[in-house]
Image 1 (spheres, protein in one colour):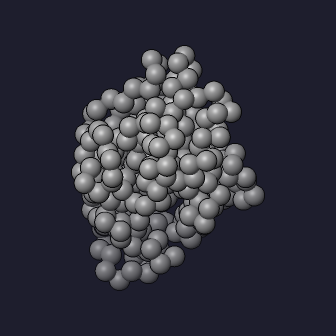
Image 2 (tube, rainbow, N blue to C red; image 1 turned 60 degrees about the vertical axis):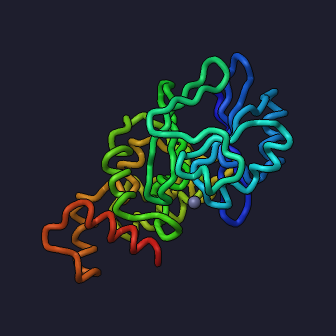
Length: 263
Ligand SMILES: [Zn+2]
């Protein structure tokens, strides 16, 4: 499987992806916004874009669909619940569906509500696996829930699906937010050495050539996977009077998500 992560270099710091079959050179583009950047990268690597996939319906993930479709003739794939929200969707996807690219690439559809209620992630069958996670999971963070989403569903997605991914799984999110997110991690858990080490290492990284985290990294540096950390719990209890004495992980997750909205 060929994976190109393409940085849009826009204020929202979007990442686009080309996922391609090395045998046939067929490619699927994920969440195109800067269409020309995606087309240029495909041309440079001799790839033929045959599918467009949207992880969810927000404008910065679908804004390039029409131009991309016009220039490539590719069909659009999205969550079945987004078919009415995104123009010209050909295929509405459900959990467990398999998307093929060329003859060698197979990606399993995960139904991952929370950021919006019609959000999918894709998991490759490669070793190591790759997760294309849109605005659900970010490097060292989680997507917001205030634009059509729900923090309870987001918690269920994290605890019920993302937590179960293997340590080796590589994380390919929809935006480059890792530096800010590591700052939030350190604000919540000041002694987190792994997060500090990664922040020092990535502080001046070029997002055109970004570090790809793994689930092993995320379990260490992402507060939203560290809901039983005594430091995180105690600090929240000091700052948020409504946190209970023995909070369950859902309560911590939602409190972190709320804090992150204003941080
Ligand atoms: Zn979004």
